[in-house]
Length: 260
Image (cartoon, rainbow, N blue to C red; front, side, top):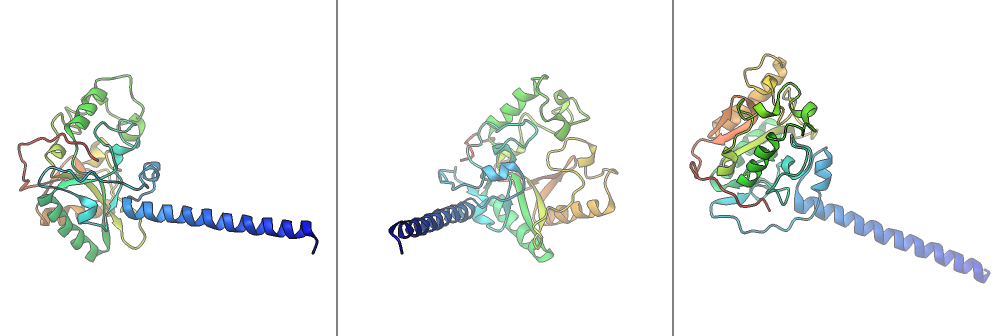
């Protein structure tokens, strides 16, 4: 074999080795990122959330990270990304993590176990919410010119009325640490169960007593509601995804530590 042929063959071999090494690194990064983060979903927000997360582990006493309590759950923390009614990351969300009071997390784990028997897993959109984030919502509501997400989240409403209509609160139960926004996912297919309206859609179609959805969609909402109520959570009539632990440990305390 000529010298230049040997060099050419060696070069091709080197390229193959380099490519294999890069592929291995890329695969490990994806696997490790997915395992450490445990955040999945179909939106662009979830792509951002596929990362290795170093938790601060300095939570106030009585609080836990939900992915450590319910590792089977999916997490799509909307206020960490820009797919939410404001259209940008919300103040106070430094990581796509769900934090919950220990008492509420224990009850939610029982919910997860009940649902698993029926063929479902939980998808969590939001849990503990800092008061800083709530203040961000208030400022946003006062800017009438900002209607970036109107068509997706509140097409029939004036954003200035969202507080009065009960869709947003200046003091949120989420800030007490035992209120959660969530849905259910088919365990076999990984597809979100059809609830008739998306999370955080502000309108009558999100009410439990709405006549705007099908019998099947009502039945799907009932699956989630019945299991949550069984384990001690109280539903909110205007938002099918919203539940609060009845015996919440901090009923009058509003926290403002960051989600990190």
